Length: 231
Image (cartoon, rainbow, N blue to C red):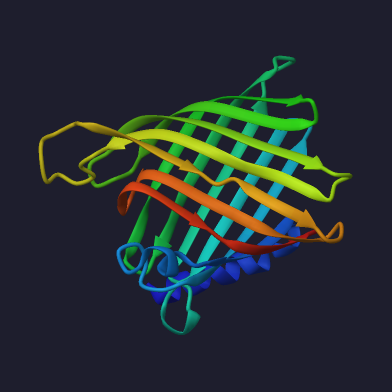
């Protein structure tokens, strides 16, 4: 497993030149919540890219959590999404893949297909989609997800507010331990605030707020201290 994580990390690093920004977050979740949430505080590196073209746009990010002993990578998570134009319609087709690896095992893949819409309201860039979501758990879960993202620059571009909110369903039982098909609703949102020191360097914070998000079946709030380099 360690070799696989290292290989994935090197692959991501080799693609950094095509990313629009690199972020480094210090996550003090152990100091805030104790061992029930995390055995330690750790750093997370995020590599993020958004690329529009005449057919639509591509968005992807990779998170690497340095949460193992001596700061080794313990989790690698990837999301990649594509919006495809449908003629002159403001509605676009949306396809997406999520998945990753962790020191404790695999993060189950998820495959999404649906419809998206993007607009600008008073200088605020907004995008949303609704999609069917296939969770490749040991016991397959057929679900739906709604996502909204936002981004706006204020104070002559010195302040940036951005983030996303995901709301989805999934089986309570990911295995075959029971015969129950009961669902739960998962909320995950990560608003960000950035002070843009220069056009390239930003300092700020991301606040992860989740509910029913494994392995914590409750509401958890995890703020970070972060730096971002914009290409």
